[in-house]
Amino acid sequence: QVQLVQSGSELKKPGASVKVSCKASGYTFTSYAMNWVRQAPGQGLEWMGWINTNTGNPTYAQGFTGRFVFSLDTSVSTAYLQISSLKAEDTAVYYCARWGGSGIDAFDIWGQGTMVTVSS
Amino acid sequence: QSVLTQPPSVSAAPGQKVTISCSGSSSNIGNNYVSWYQQLPGTAPKLLIYDNNKRPSGIPDRFSGSKSGTSATLGITGLQTGDEADYYCGTWDSSLSAAVVFGGGTKLTVL
Picture (spheres, each protein chain N blue to C red):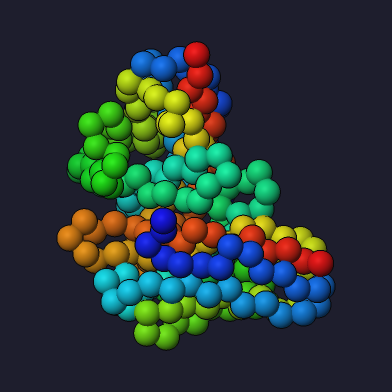
């Protein structure tokens, strides 16, 4: 079945880096854009941006430039989110979400989420 | 402060109907499709409604969506205890910094 499976929870110290993976299966990876969404503890959903899975070109939302990097490995149908110089306020659940494409203007498939905790 | 405005909470009894509103502007809801997501406690969001009023396969027809002008509404009939969740609306915002925007979320309590 169509699914996105993310890597497990991470505990990092301030200033460190983290790389979250999102492995797609059940569909042609390069046919759908991949997005990243952040949810801080007890808060709502915040769109971080997306990556074109054909070209690898990323687009970052305001507030997610500089320390955030989207990347791909199409050979294993996997998208990555890397965050550098981690801060306490980066503590959140990070979701990858597939954009439905033609006919479905929405995030139709979501990963299970990866909890990133930044604490000294 | 979210770009889209939702009520923080709504409640109703089992079997009843509830509506959740989502208010925006011409740069987002007014000119783009609206989607709705259900987030059960401790789980990832799940698509409920896309393109204003369409349901993905597997979503029961108890869930419905509508849009008028710069506002959208999610309706849920025949409420069940399993519907207790947070509900989010989302859409594109076509302003200078084009982005996907979400409402702040509405907590549904089935009394």
